[in-house]
Image (cartoon, rainbow, N blue to C red):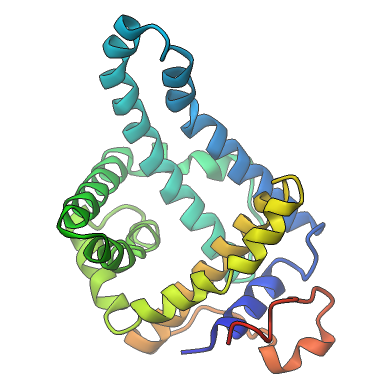
Length: 243
């Protein structure tokens, strides 16, 4: 398994080594679009919070709306990030809504069951919940690669198999982005939008590496490793601190 710095180098390579590249900005816009739409139920709930009767009446419908939106959107974004990881920059806004057309019901069930399982494990203690979150973290990548043909159960089980022995590696990859998120927050919080794209792209590459290790096949294009980052335009100021 490549180190966290090598995975990040591949992510930057896919994003054309510039925070102002067309593909990076495009993914930022798509992620922002998803956040706005999926966050509408929560925004409405906050707006009516001062009216207890109305808030109580809308609580269940808004919760259902959140569940119906989050799964298909996560399915779609998993496809987009994996497509970019494979070197295909041909993505459009229509791809953001593909989860609603291909396998809406399966996406909703997968998101609901995954969230429920993580929540139930978290009731035991926070650590089991975190472990399960990482165990099920690859489920939507698996679902979208099958075109929604795999059931939610198959996606969760395969995610557990893929991440077996590598949950710690994924945790370290996530941890290596702390500096970036702090830097993004210092830029009036706006920088977090760019960091989120960078982070999700790195996770997509991590999934591709897991497939190489577990199944012996790769769809990842050759990308510069961390050792060759002197030739990369976009530098990671936290490169030497987290590995």
